[in-house]
Image 1 (cartoon, rainbow, N blue to C red):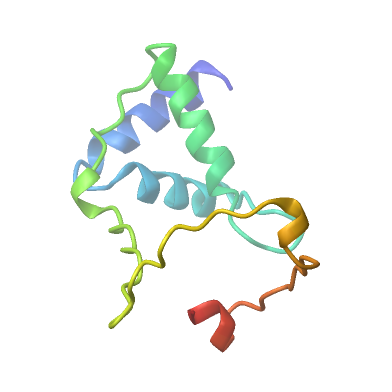
Image 2: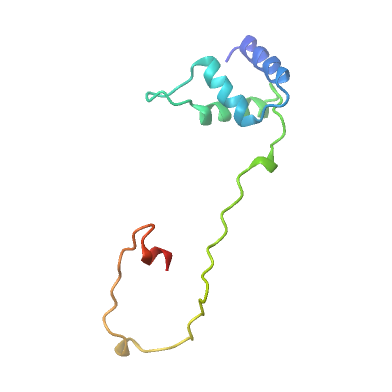
Length: 111
């Protein structure tokens, strides 16, 4: 990447102070028509480039906007669930163990 392009990018970022790093990367992809074979924006590659340029001191990115990140999903809770009592047994006492695949979204998955 040439110094003229870096200078343009630096000024462009300064002209949009309210933009997040993610938006800068997406807008940059659109401006450069930087897409993959399926036509999707290469925003991950653009973010990587921006971070490398910032690491080299050639541009200054806005601070991370942590408050806009998605909240983590909480673990599900089950009404009336009681933890089973602990038990011990020798291998001789245990019948054949059977493993069963559980499909996502099935009643077994919800259990």
